[in-house]
Image (cartoon, rainbow, N blue to C red; front, side):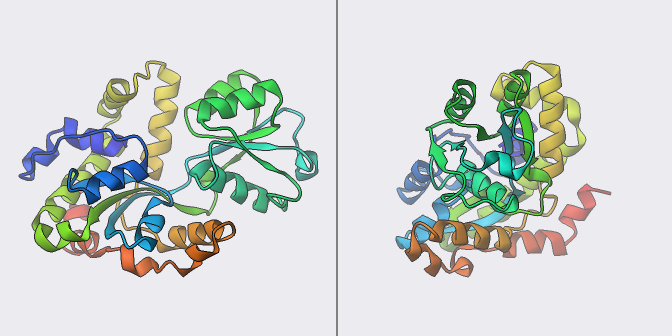
Length: 290
């Protein structure tokens, strides 16, 4: 979310004629419910919620993909050195169907292991619980997001895979609007995205401000964590934030293994990249990065 915080702190929404209040809503499903109720105009979410929403005939459309890669690390006990070491062991995730679950499955597939047959996936509820599971020995590997993985390193656990460096696409963070907003208030979409893209640019190129934003919104004060967090996200935020269809296709395939009805999801019905395309074509984005 750092790019939207940066856009807000830099006054970019005001500059583009919008009065934007940032409201935290825990969980993308709850966010989408608020959007469908007309309480929220734009949403910043991620993961499978947009697929579930549209299969239930909920008219929500992704208009930008600000991050299309995984930001997850698979951490393991020091004894895990190769795929065979993880066979018969357990890997912890927060909940099934979440980014941690997706990460664990992609990791196991890369290692040539079956998520069910070879290495059971253990649902533990939260990122802190994934770390606790590793500490207690309940699991021998776990999916952790930054900066929680740094705690794991300090406790002696090893990094088995950094999914952000793999050619794996995933709709980690996207901007969503309802079809009603696109039909009745479409003129607000472009300025919202202009401010957002400027927020991405500022976060990437102005490290001191980016760190101030992280301190304010996350309470991070450890300089090494600030440094690594900025490096990671400045690398992964999309300069031209198209929603990556391959990432959504990957997600549908994984979800359909447990929920076959999701295989019927029509990605084109809930992705609208034309606003970003217009900003790319008219030079707005390239002018920022001159």
